[in-house]
Image (cartoon, rainbow, N blue to C red; front, side, top):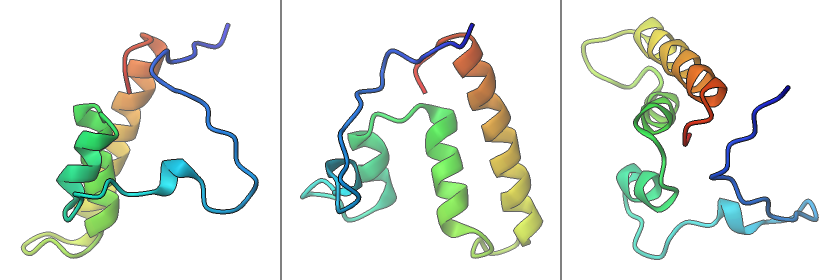
Length: 85
């Protein structure tokens, strides 16, 4: 049986710009998008690591890739437990 998160609302797409790609009017930083999308801690951290890939001072690209892998695994576990992603 496949678990389906209950926090997802499907939005129809015609292949053009769709509402789930629009930024909130107040969004000037990633934190605003994370909040508006009501991302879990794991999803927000994955999003941030993808966005900054290789740009964080003092760490190399592998740091961000490892962080992404860690949070993808966490999201998979959360999905299995039917938790909000």
